[in-house]
Length: 107
Image (cartoon, rainbow, N blue to C red; front, side, top):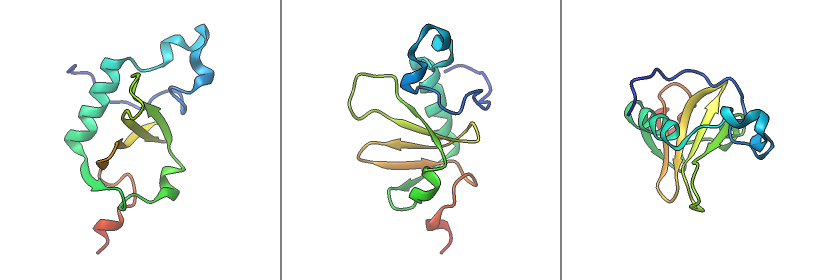
């Protein structure tokens, strides 16, 4: 893992198909960059399962799909260009505290 700081990504839609051209080639995350971002969210985030993350808030986020050929790869959610959650297929969400309204913490 690198020692670089996690900073907001310049573009709200990172791995969108429209960015596949040569003009945007350097703007997608590499597998190593994605792995670093995932590790950061796991380190600072809290496991929240599936039901604790409101779909309304996920709709306000942009998504980075894991750069893999696997059909059920990881999905990282960004809000205002900052990482807020990761979806692990068949497991649930890991959420960065304070970034998404956590229903499970309101009880």
